[in-house]
Amino acid sequence: MEIRKDDHIIGTWFAEAPNGDDWLLTVLRRGEKYLGEYRFRYTRDGKIFDSKDKKSFYSLELSAARYSEETVIEKLNRLFEIIKTRYSKFHKFIKVCGSFDRWRYLMAQEDFAHIKREEIK
Image 1 (spheres, helix red, strand yellow):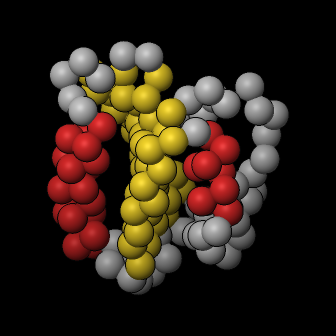
Image 2 (tube, rainbow, N blue to C red):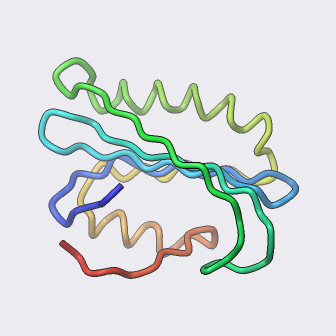
């Protein structure tokens, strides 16, 4: 999922399993839609970038006309509770409800967030 400079970021959910596998979800609002992308990462080596880890990506879309921001967070937190049963070593929800810059600042504070910088659109 491409995150744009003018997107309204809802938050990022992260969970790590005892074996090092992890799950990551980021949700944003763009126009009349909430868009999200989540992925499962299955570790194969110790590298952060350019690793041989296997990743499975999925997306979600919800109507902003139908759901409030707080309802979206509530629903995704219920999903997160299920995810945490397997990914139980470490888990955290970073609530942003703000700009791309706020999201980037909050994520930079997290040890689990290894973000490659790309051109901001």
